[in-house]
Length: 59
Image (cartoon, rainbow, N blue to C red):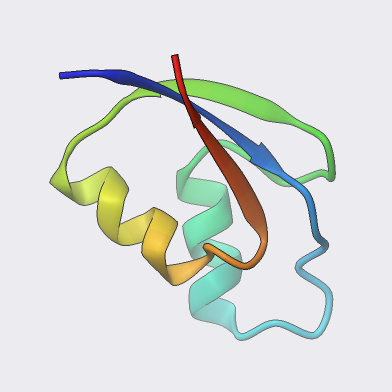
């Protein structure tokens, strides 16, 4: 599968707990922090839940 770079661009303040947990599961937590992960179905679900808080780029 492909690698993707996920960057958090918005804060999780005043967001539901499920969105905060999704950001943590992606390995993020601070604005402008990036991680590179292998793209799979579980990752796709987490990204969809917080798509308004992150930027996703294919590597």
